[in-house]
Length: 159
Image 1 (cartoon, rainbow, N blue to C red):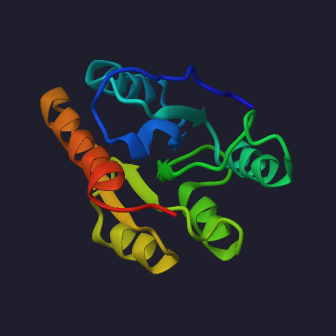
Image 2 (spheres, one colour):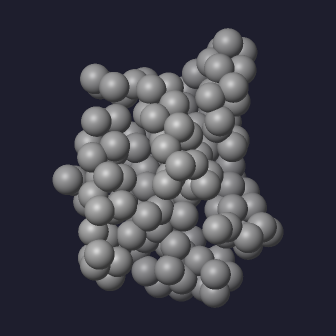
């Protein structure tokens, strides 16, 4: 399991986000580091957990379901999922999570470089809750992630 450091400081986000865990399923170190920099800069109280492959993510989620010690491992409040992963790709991960009755309630945001309409349609058909194309420009990337965090952790209630 490849857990990332916990990021817990600051005021961005509501008190609802203080115990939130975001599982980032991302193989690119560069893309993950961009996310991590955003969370550090915005000083959220959201814990990031990274899994670099689809297989490791599914194993992590199974461990979450099987553990009784919720202080050590907890189900994520939100999943950020890259489509193009080594081994089991993002579509298969999405399908597997949405077919599991114990995981189906976890919102999944596809965060990918693909803006192919077929990918978008397929992901929504598989149960994605949102589809966000990774911006190449840092300012635009940060703005889109800020909107994502504000929506998922401030505007709505999560299970």
